[in-house]
Image (tube, rainbow, N blue to C red; front, side, top):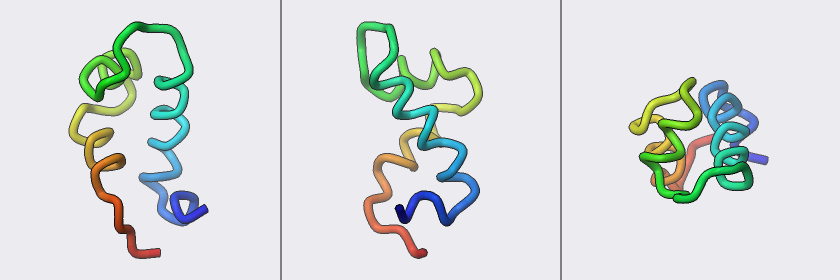
Length: 55
């Protein structure tokens, strides 16, 4: 689990997954960020869009 080695990823990953499986219609970044409340759109987008992470 490469995401677990970085503190920011460790915080954002559960929020992202909960947004995908939780209630709410649209699963795009903006609605997920609005429902999450704890993280912003940019943080969620960076988490998903940055495919290559340094461990």
